[in-house]
Image (cartoon, rainbow, N blue to C red; front, top):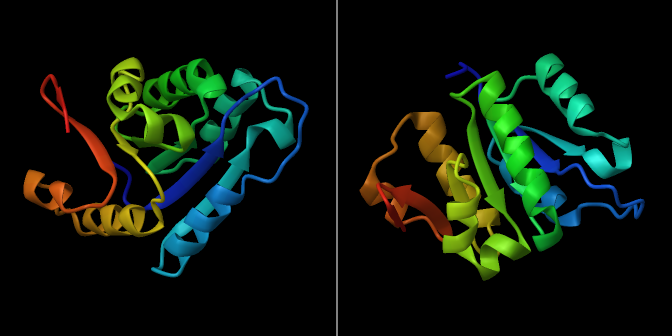
Length: 159
């Protein structure tokens, strides 16, 4: 894994021309920054990114953690994006959150077969708790169970 704990929060590649600020990513970034984390937000829609440009961005700006905002219409895009992240560096931790994982957590984690973790509901508190565990290197099942909204795989089971 990379030594730093830079976090990249991503509004995924989407052909939509609708430019609306990803406020939820802003809330998450603010919560994380208040706890000393380095956070960047990448709005692929605003930037006009396709998958090639997204990959180029990752090559120039590595992050230890990449989190994706997921609406139902973005599922395929997020799947392709996670594939890119993992191909470039399999040790990069990937996380999803948003409306779709909140509504269908099990199905989301199963469909996004390379994603590491997901969050349901409002995750400003849970994500900070989770990143603290990552920063301190203390990831164990007991600690994970205490994080509000966290979804993960335990073998074939979705917790």
